[in-house]
Image (cartoon, rainbow, N blue to C red; front, side, top):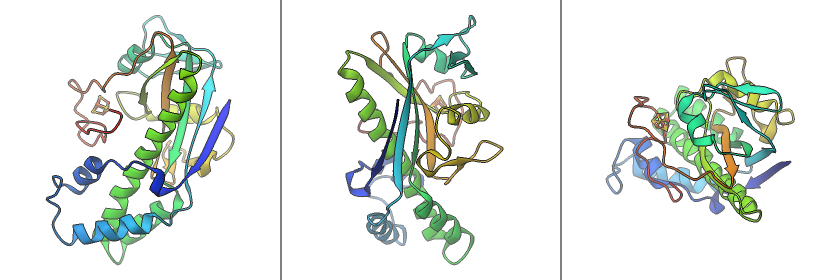
Length: 232
Ligand code: SF4
């Protein structure tokens, strides 16, 4: 099963905590020129027409004996102990791909390299927040659909995070048509547009949603660490 949807900026719940932290300030303490830039960028984002998200359901999943890999569709994902522990009771999986789109990704990198790096940085932070907000929306859609059959879902997990090798992104993309939601992969498994996220969600009667278990992880750049959200 494949599901994709286009989304408008105004229907997304942007995590302002994520935006503030990305900019390096506490809520309500954003100084100029960032505050003014943020307002302009926020308004500009209302014009974005390429925000998209989608998911694919795999109806079966198995785990390796050492509980460090999961298998589905004949493909092994070396997601590691931490993620496999969360997925362990899953009967199905949802692979997802979400993007803030090419427009904001290109705008931020152009500005960062050229005429206004500060404005480029604000677009960059907002692009990340949009991609996560699309992730929240897709997660919500999956949850609503699965509730109909009495299933629950886990939190979402992405290659490159929680000790899951980013190279597995190629395997994840193999479950979608070419360029799902307009997103492609480089050889080194980076997504283009850059403001995109992908990952997996466990589904089943015995799984449950848990906060990320970050106490033993030192990935300082992780957007999920210590960030509150509507869902988390
Ligand atoms: S900080 Fe937490 S969510 Fe981020 S990679 Fe580490 S364990 Fe995963």
